[in-house]
Image 1 (cartoon, rainbow, N blue to C red):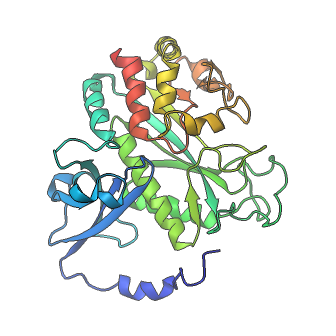
Image 2 (image 1 turned 120 degrees about the horizontal axis):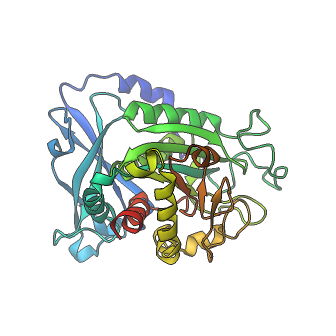
Length: 361
């Protein structure tokens, strides 16, 4: 449970939420910090309701407090790139996703959206679609998995995946609240389920075309952290939060181009897999913020993963790098699933390298 004094009674807040705003709009600016994993945000008031990112002014923040600048030259710039409804403050208030730029107007080191957008623009005729399955783990304030015995472990994995019942799933209220918050915001969320390890869950975002995949997933992550905050629970995207005989957490990426989705598309999937097999190391480096170090703990060849050292592909094989769903194999068109990205990956990096390898090179 949270440390005493760190939580407040949320029902008291509700009466303030209904107060008139007198034509003013609260815009929460969201960005990725210098770790490449954390999300930060701060709010500003506008005297009109923005309907597009270009309506929102460029803003700044102290990069020395977000691992992005030195104190002697700390100003960083927030460039709005996507806008969503705010499910916490509700209409007309907005969530504003931003790219980060340095004092010299160049993208910050963790601004992977900038190059991803250039790649998606070059590949727009291929109409790349993505869907990412975001796994995560709920923790108590003390870092212990939510719902686990404090002096032991729950029973072995088996009954928890898509489980039902108080002895099988922990934290469903958080999952349900997050799902509705995403729908309200305009996130293209397509599902959720309890995962193999107790206190571990997954939500899916997509299909999204091009740059919108990263935009929607990053805002969905922000919403997840904010919802969990209201419940006094912590969310971790660590790819292997519990060592031992427990599943890790990934962000499997479902991917297709227009050619793959049309009749006979399996041919183009096989060509893409052949290209992917030649660039395994490049993809592993792009699939977690530490260029493979985080994924090394997860991609062991066990617990429904492939080995980080080997590339493999197969139909309905959850132990392969690339899985072709059985239905796709039978129908001869559809999409492939790259199971290598870690739960804490940057979706901009993942989608960019997939398109570079399979479309542009």
